[in-house]
Length: 207
Image 1: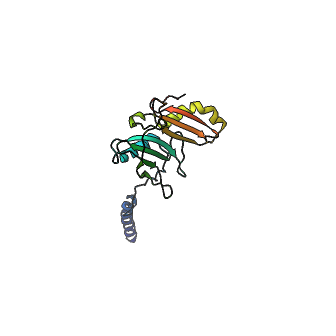
Image 2: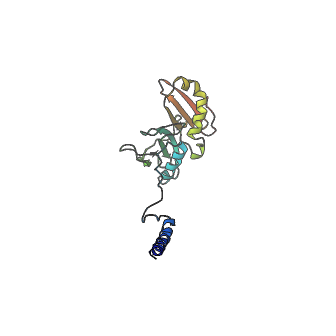
Image 3: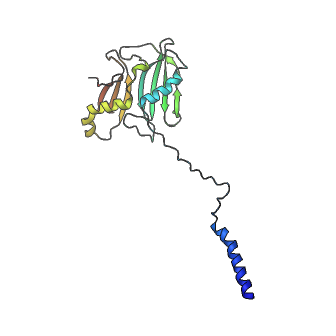
């Protein structure tokens, strides 16, 4: 009789434990299961990308906006590479206002002077076009800095191979001796470097 009671109690205990063992563990309450993506580090951008970012801001200053120059710059810890830069400076002019204004676009903060995004300088008097410095329309600027870099590099390849690691800078401007705005690409420095000119409308090397 005692043996039967013992066997019955053991069977009931097993039946009670079995469902509990088969259930999956419940997740802890108030636990955020979503994974957050790490913030992407800022990277250098092409000239046209920066140009049209500041162009939108500049349009609120003058409706007859023309570009006078576009130049690359540097920001610490941002690598300028393959025709892209961390900082671009654009000078716009307004013939009706007889004024010029400097705009910069930065991919990151840099000291007290440069803030990420668009930075606007004060309007200054502008005497007008000269044979060496002529304004141009945004529609004439169709060849981006990265494309101009590839074209110019074909001409500068021998010098670049002989001088590895030299920095490269970009300046876009227009003069009466050219048919369109021209990219002036400089590897190294003016004292010890190599320069290539690339038409910013057609993309051909200017001889």
